[in-house]
Image (tube, rainbow, N blue to C red):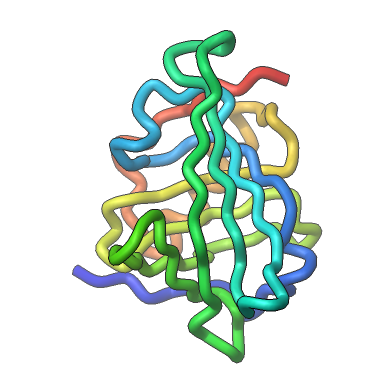
Length: 154
């Protein structure tokens, strides 16, 4: 099955900044990740988004790992569909499935439904917040099984 739903509009400058990964069905890069966060910054000269994914490996005091990525906005109307490149030559679809009107949380997925990231602007989220976002994403028809909470330290 392929999922294509995205939010109706994303204000790219407002979306930039740091997003803390609260929960998700994540990639192998994120196994054993503590305090995972993505920082998005607009790269004007390259007309793209530079993504700096950081986390502590193995525990809150573990070594900091960094995975720089590049992203391009593919949907020029909604700005909610991107292509993300963790390393050359791979590029993956990135769908902004849901987004708080005040840009305090977001849910991001991929067309296959294999991955889901629920992120917020602060490191800590309560279980009710996360469950509410999961419920919203489920109502969109996106699979929400096997969601795990990511360890965050405030």
